[in-house]
Amino acid sequence: MKLITAIIQPHKLEDVLQELDKNEIHLRTVSDVIGCGRQKGRTEVYRGRKETGGCLKKVRLEIAVNEDFVQPTIKAIMAAAKTGNIGDGKIFITDLVECIRIRTGEKGQEAIG
Amino acid sequence: MINSGDTAWVLISTALVMLMTIPGLAFFYGGLVRRKNVLSTIMQSFFVLCLISIQWILWGYSLSFGPDIGHFIGNLSWAGLRNVGLAPNPDYAATIPHQLFMVYQMMFAVITPGLITGAFAERIKFSTYIVFTLLWATLIYDPVCHWVWGTGGWLKNLGVMDFAGGIVVHITSGVSALVCALVIGKRRGYGREPMSPHNLTLTVLGAGLLWFGWFGFNAGSALSANGVAVSAFIATNTAAAAAALTWMFIEWKLVSKPTMLGGATGAVAGLATITPASGFVSPFAAIIIGIMAAVICYIAVAVIKLKFTYDDSLDAFGVHGVGGTIGAFATGLFAQKLINPAGANGLFFGNPSQLMVQSIGIAATVIYSVSVTFVILKVLDLVMGLRVSDEEEVIGLDITQHEESAYTLLD
Amino acid sequence: MKLIIAIVQPHKLEDVLQELEKAEIHLKTVTNVLGCGRQKGRTEVYRGRKETGGLLKKVRLEIAVNDQFVKPAIEAIIRGAKTGNIGDGKIFIQNLDECIRIRTEEKGHEAIG
Image (cartoon, rainbow over all chains, first blue to last red; front, side, top):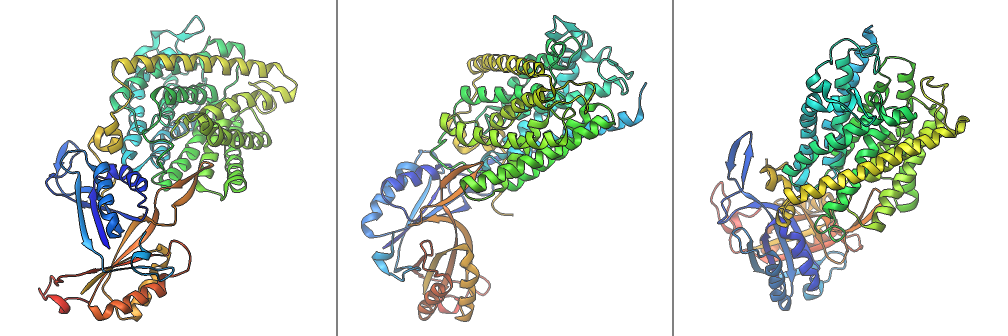
C-alpha cells in the first residue's frame, strides 16, 4: 500500500478529482496549504505597492491506494494537473505500513478505497 | 417652503439608500460567490456607487428629471446641475431643497445597475463592466426613470403607480440581468461542479443591511416625514417578514430544512416586491404581497431557472425582476386612496383600469430594457469582449483581474 | 517510529483527543481537511436547489509515536471515532525514519512525545 501526496494548483483541483473519479479512485483527502518551489510567489498589489512573495496557495491531495492503483493514480493526477507552467506541483509517494477502516476495523488491502 | 423635518428625513433616507449598495448589496452578493471572486464581486457594487455618482451629476439627473422631450426623456438643460439649486422644485418635492431630491434619486440610480451584477458574477471583465454600467444607466435607467417619475413622462401621464421603484429599479435591472445571463453565458463548469456560496454570514449581513436601508428607499420615497412615509415603512417591514417566513416554510416542507439563505432571499424578494406598492397599500395587503413574492420568486429561482438552465448566478432576475413585476402588478390590485390620497384605487377597491395601466407600464419597461440591454451587450462583446478568458475564470477574478486576494491561509 | 495519520469525523475529534489523552498520547497535530471515500459527499440546499457533491468536512490527525505506542494509539482513535456509520474515517500508518525536537535537537525515540 502507498500513500500518494500531491501538491497541485488550487484551480486544477476540480479537474483532478474528476479524473480520479473516472479511474474509480474515490478515496481522497484535500487540504489548503501554502508552499512554493521554483515558482517564486504570487504578485499582489496593495494600495499601489506590488508585493511579491510569501508562499503560494496550493492544494494538498492525499490518496491511499493499493499497489496496482499507484500508476493509474499518478497518471490521473498528471493528466489533469499538468499545464506545463512552473507551479504545476509535485507528487510524493510513501509506503503505507497499515491502513484501518475505523467503522469496521478492517485492515490492509480491504480497508483501502 | 423648505420644511426642516422633511429635509432631515430625506437626508437620512439618502444615506440609508447609499448603505444598500455598499456594503448591503456588496456583501449580499459577495458571500454568494466562490472565495476566489469575492473581491471582484464587492468591487462591482463599490464602483457603481462611484461611477453613477458622477454620471448623475453630469448628465443622468437631467436626462431623468429635466424638462421633458417628447414624453420620453429629459433634456440636457440641467446637466452639471445647472438650474438645480437649493430652492424646492414643487413638481417633485415642494418641501425639500431641489438638490436634496437630486441626491436622493442619485442613490436609486446607483443601486439599480448594481443589482444586475448578480447575473454575470464571477466571469465579466472589469473594464467592460465599467462601460456597460455607464451605457446602461444612460440608455435604460435614465429614460425609464423619466417615463415613470419625470414631469411629462408618458407612463406618469398614463397614471402608472410606482411608489419607490418597483418598475424603475427592480424591473429594469431584473429583466436586464436575465438578458446578461443569457448573452454572457454560463460560468465554466456550471451545473457540473458545485458552486456553493463561500460565506453565507456575509450574505446575511448584506441582507440585513439591505432590509435596514430599504426603509430609506421606500419610506423615504414619501419625500416627506408624514403619514405616507409611516405607512410605507410598515408595509416594507411587513412584506419582508412575510416573505422570509413563507420562503422558510416552503423549503422546510418541499426540500428538507429551513435555511438561512432561504430566509435572507425571501426577505429581499419581499422587499423588492413591496417597493412599488409601499405607500399605497395597507399592512394586511403587504402580508399577502410578501407571501406572493416568496412563492413566485421561489418558483423562479428553484424551478424555472433549473428548467431553462440559464446561469443567473446570484438570482438577480429571479429575485428583483420577478419581484418587481409582481409588486407593480399587485399595486394595481391592492392600492387604496384611503392610504394615500395622491394615488389611485386598485382592482380590489373598485378600479380595474389601474391594473391595465400597471400592465402597460410593466410591458413597456420589460420590452425596452430587454432590447436595449441586448444591443449594448452585443456591441460591447464585439468591441471589448464580455468575458474573462477561461483560464482567468478558473483561477478567479480577484487574482487575475485585480491582483488581490480576500483571504490568506495563514496569519 | 511510526507516523499515524487518521481522518475522522469533525464532531468526533473531541472524543478522539480525550481517548488519546487517556492513553497518554499527547503529541498531535490537527488540520481541517475535505475528503470522501464511500460516503458520497454532502447535500446542501441553496435557495431551494439541492446540491450534492463536493467533499465532506473531515479532520486530519497526525501523531508520531514509538512502536510500542502504535497499538494503543489506534485503539484510542477507534474508541473515540467509531460510530458504525459510513464516514467514520481511516487510519494510515507510515514508517518514520527520523524525528527531531527542534528546541533541543534530540533525535529519535527521545524526541517523540
